[in-house]
Image 1 (cartoon, helix red, strand yellow):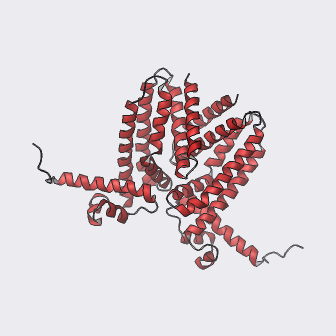
Image 2 (cartoon, each protein chain N blue to C red):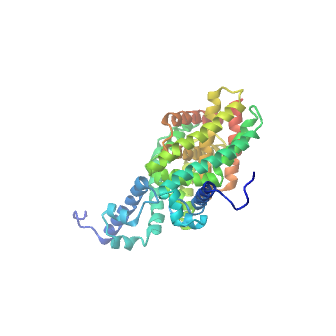
Image 3 (tube, rainbow over the protein chains, first blue to last red):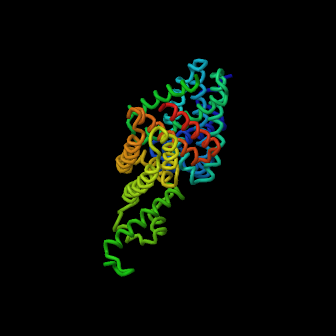
Length: 199
Length: 199
């Protein structure tokens, strides 16, 4: 039986508050950057009092560690949808490059980069990021290995990691306002080279 | 005539204080990251009082803008030395990839990434970074165009920017503690592909 509207259980309310705080954290990371993101700002955007927020996360560090997972879950879901749409065989390669570019250059990826750079000098945050980031990469790689099955897996894996790292570099270029036309040309060139390497 | 030791002019003392502050800024960016770098910490490391520091830089923003230039001057000098050592012709390509990797992955590059990511949400810092970063890239590209003169310049330019963006991505991977063996393998693979693209 459906619950009457507005009649949420305590567990549902808790979950909703938690999600609101995590979504607000991502918004803050994208708009303000890690350095200027504060518990106060996150609470204001989420419409949650500081006291209520502390029932979920003791401090900024705890909130950030949870945001890493929240963010990666969202990125995985988006990537899984795009992976479903890839053609099969080596024709998938240019499409996979476009897909990885979308995955590594969007708003969620920008929030990840903020956390990632902060994690370099923050061991607790780094410990939270490494396993989930690795799982994201592995998930995408496993799926692509299944799609581009004509190539020796080591070849596909090498092309995959070259692509991911190039996309990360291009995303940084985009963040600082490098010329979009040059990025587009480099993406096209890389699709051509990657396809050629697979032939 | 040589000046007696310890007898510095006021201009020399000013310059020395300024350099000490800028070097301390780079150290802080590398060790603490942008978010935790404060004027107080920089002054303590430089052995300069806050009052004296403010004769040079009114606030963190001014200091950071000057640090960008200081950092880029150092990176340019290091790159210019490595460029002098490159062989000529297409054989320069694998050596140039190694050189760009060193240039984009060292301590100074780490400090640049900190400033760069902070600049995404800080228009004044971005305005300070863009021209000097562009000048660094242009300088390296012009020199490499002179060294790899057999190729059409557009080919060399495309390979150069692909390399730079891949190195930026790999440097981020290194910062978060990605596996060094995989990075090494990807670098070797890229040297092979880049050389092949030039043949």
